[in-house]
Amino acid sequence: MTHMLSASQLSPQLAQNMHKLDIRSEQPSDADWVEHLHQLCFGPGRFARAAFRIRERFGVDDRLSFVAEHEGVAVANVKMSPINLSGMNGYLLGPLVTDPHRRRLGAGRLLTMHVTQKALEQASCKFVLLVGDRAYYEPLGFQPISPQKIDFPAPVDPMRVLAVVKSAKVKKGLTGPISFWSGDN
Ligand SMILES: CC(C)(COP(=O)(O)OP(=O)(O)OC[C@H]1O[C@@H](n2cnc3c(N)ncnc32)[C@H](O)[C@@H]1OP(=O)(O)O)[C@@H](O)C(=O)NCCC(=O)NCCS
Image (cartoon, rainbow, N blue to C red):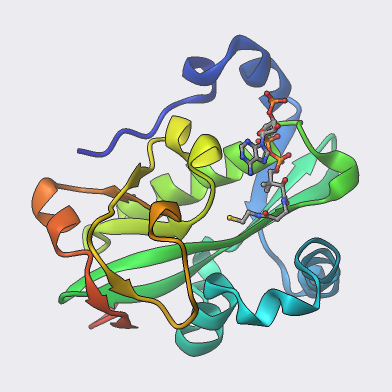
């Protein structure tokens, strides 16, 4: 049921660009740069967004915070919040952000594919959820889960709630209140 794609399956041009991109773990020294990007790209209203509210409440799995570099320059960042829905552990992907001067290089898609694959490699992770544009995330394997209703801590358009899941049973369980990841990860 997981359908993550590779860059070459998306487009030859993207695959070519992605050779110039590297992914590394986020370091404490990246914090100011990441915060600056969040301010720049999401503005003062960012704390009302679902990804920020969930990050505030459920924290971030530091092992899944990544930076994309283009020819050695940091260009994009992604974070993952560990959550639980209907007794199943998974992650909320976000915020995902790319430096406005370094867009359309493939960094956002590469980070999304990388972090989703890393998350799903964990046996205890059953899904990766996000709130975002279908046109961007569907080609990467994310699918709408509507009409199911997840109680987000901020208003969200149900059509923008997308997920990659490990099975159809998991997809049915993506409903109700969000709670803390249960057990060790
Ligand atoms: C969305 C974002 C992360 C994409 O970053 P990026 O590194 O430029 O992404 P990529 O290079 O992998 O992909 C660029 C492609 O996606 C398209 N794209 C970008 N945002 C899109 C969107 N919201 N919907 C559909 N397509 C989108 C671009 O037009 C481009 O298409 P092209 O290759 O045909 O020219 C970046 O625009 C950003 O930081 N936006 C502000 C923050 C944000 O909205 N984050 C996502 C929250 S869910």
